[in-house]
Image (cartoon, rainbow, N blue to C red; front, side, top):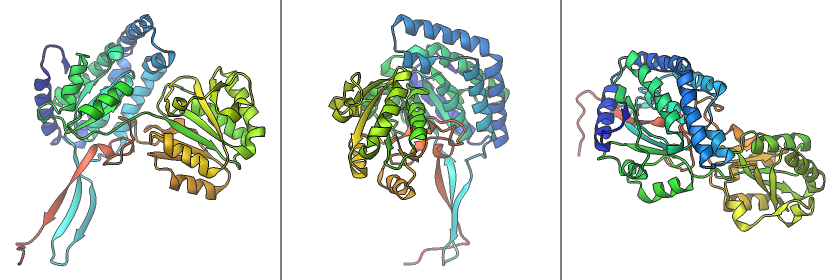
Length: 421
């Protein structure tokens, strides 16, 4: 439910109670709620767009960046996409109660590992209001209660979307506290969530910028599905198909520069630089993309800005890209190892052996071959949306969908077994 005067401890207690109740609900009830939510999002479209318009106006008053406003903005197409995502999540098999493995011991004991909900998930996000629906719905499908805390700049949009979700919960006779949203945008609330709200929160999922990430790293007292910066790379290898590679690079940077899957650094093999670089530079310039390049890259165009050390480790989220010409495959790997945030990397090459080697050597959550990094998305993976892209290595990695929002327990069945000395 929307929270105004309720204190954060009460929110946590309500969520814990709702999680316990939700664990007993059937798949049919959860699916009924998701279907109702999808319908409500469309029915409430005008209210959601009006709320979003207010957020957009406030953001423009604050002179926030175009990329930020792009992430924030909703339109009829994006609202339809939110509704479609809810329907897609509904169509998935229930991830709870699945037998993940089973075996029998020599003494006759039968042991099974079965998926279970995590419990209560705290989701902290900033500009994208669609996360409200994605996070609430994915958590619900996996049997979890959720506490949502959106950013101050998207708060009106988030509240409007949340209202549609709560209607769906009520229609399905599911505790409306299953999906709660915090209206108070004070950063102190984030700290309390990171401390677990009196052990009410079982896991935190942060989605935001550097300041939020820094707070999470410093303050978290509960497990975190870490979503750090998206410093994504594309390596255009010497055997790459040049025209297709230009198209992929342009899409990876310019389709939506403000998303975490947008490429920030393009590495180009020296052997193809003379033929490929003019094609790439012209295509980027045609779309008003600023280029910051190494010394070799600058030789191809006088308008290329010299790349500083910090450029290689910067998530621009803007129509800005860094380009470096590398001598060989090993140098490309070395650069990515040094500057990657562990999100997404892609190699463009027609040599399958080099593609396999790249995908083996690179230790990021998502490693691609001959495709745009903008496919780094739970929906594109067929996961029905995502709460985020986890860049850590524990429990969940990559797009966090319904299956990643479960834990498991062991069921052990015997027949009067006793253990000997």
